Every structure is written in structure tokens, then in C-alpha cells.
Length: 278
Image (cartoon, helix red, strand yellow):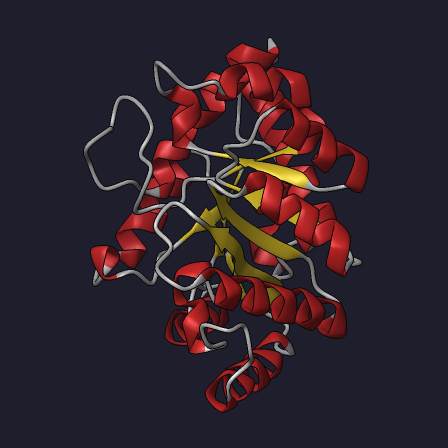
């Protein structure tokens, strides 16, 4: 089983990375996609992946930080060009398997919307330039983000809609265009619509993720999330789909490998297999 979206570089895990990874392995998680969200975290993500064969990295600028790339009118700034150039260099490293997380966030609007659109577009083009898929962050902007992708052109390698919170139309859009859905802790929440959307999507269209240190599943709500808790998400998804947890783990891991590639180190070949039946 692979945690397809985690932030092990965050200060919440400072000094604990080895222990967090060890607990994850005990819970059946043997691979990690560590996701960048600005230039410093992208550098840190690459450094983690270079140090640990079980980790792969993404690099990118989150919509919250889009103003580091573009101004309030949507023009790429000189600093933004420099950031994009460094992201291009980072993306050339073999440990980097995607551009992200990128997208639109109209819930917090921490960057002006024209800047968000401009940064999003520039990084979609970057993904095509370097031949990588994308990890998309969308919040309260599903119609706008999906329409924008259709307008500017889908990245050739497609990608994943991380922390999926869309509706039936978004599930259909993703299926028709070859995108996967990132399903994490919220699928376990009492009032969540995610279970019915997971059932609609089916196992072949989803990846399992934590977004740790955020979005912990039941029974860990209110705590720092970590990759070991992915087992709770696995169990919920398996129950919804009426499949054995080991089967869901095997098939979602296979989907991860198809999109992002296998972990290359032979010592980590267990990352492409499911954990034993629990």
C-alpha cells in the first residue's frame, strides 16, 4: 500500500520521520509520495526522496502561494519565472514523479484568483514540458478548475485530483479524461458524501492518501495525521466497495504505479504489493 499524498517534510514531523515511516510499514504502508506545495517544500521533498528509496517526490506551487509566481492581474513576475525555472530543474531529477500540488483554492483565496489561474496554467504547461503527471488541489472551485483544464489543455500524463471533494459530475469528468481521485481520511467522516462517490468511481479510479499531517481519519480526528492511519481509510474504502482490504490495497497500488511509476530500488519491491489480509 502506498500513501499517495503526504507531507513528511512538515515541521509537525520534525525529528520523527524515521519513526513515522516505521509505524506506517507496520500498518502495511511501504511507499510514500511526498508532495511539495511551494519552492522550499519542493526542495525538501526532493531531499527526502533522495535519502529514502521508499519515497518519491512532487514539486510545485500550491494555489495559496500562487502570488509568488504571478501578480494580482495574472501576469507571471520575474520572481515567478525564476521559481518556474527552478521547478523545471528539480523536476528533471529521477526522484520527482509529478508536478504538484497545483490548482485553485477559492475557499481561502490566499492568493488573488487571477494569480491562481496564471500559476495553475504555467505549471500545467511545465508538467507537459517535463513529461510528468500533475497532483491537483481543488477546493470550492471544482467547476472552475475542471473547466480551466479543458480550456487550456489537459496534461498529457494526466494525474490525480487530490483530497477529492467534488460531486458526481466531477467523478464523471475524471473518468472520461483519465484522472484518478485521491481518497483520504474524510471518507471515514460521518456526514461525508465520499463513500457514495467512491462507490460510483470504483476501485480502479482511486488512490489512497493521507495528506498528513492533516485530515486524519476516524478514530484519530483532532490528532496529527500520519501514514500509518491510512489503514483506516483502506478499511472504509474496502467496506464501501465490498472488497477485501488486501484487494483494494493491491489495486490502488497498481494504479499508483501506472501513474507515477514503481519505486525503483529492488529492496523496496514490497511497495508494489498489497499488505497481508488483515
